Image (tube, rainbow, N blue to C red; front, side, top):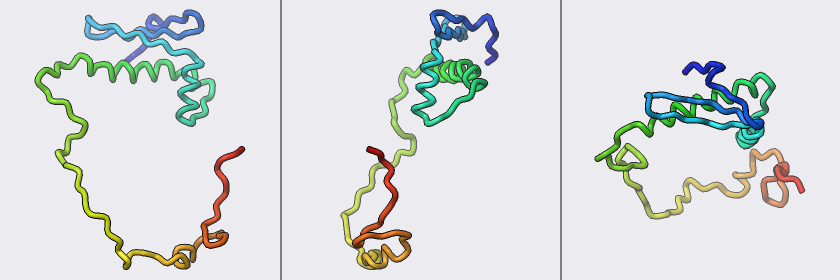
Length: 126
């Protein structure tokens, strides 16, 4: 999808992107700089200015592509959440002693232990 300047409008600090297609459907995606930064934070991404300028187009392009699904005729198609036709396979829980390690064996390669436990650096701060 090629987005031109005519497709982009900025109103009230929002980026308005007109993604028209198929002559009968028009999608308008509003993305603010703050929303993009929020999404980046959720994804654990750090964005530079160049990426921040490019992302409204890129994200809107993805949304536009995914919204094409709405144009598909799914009449008579059964809903599914997976396509392999596999069913859940359950087994009885069993202790397999030959696969078990003693506490000493389990801790034998640990870099740091304390009173019979693995000792690791804290990942949460107070």
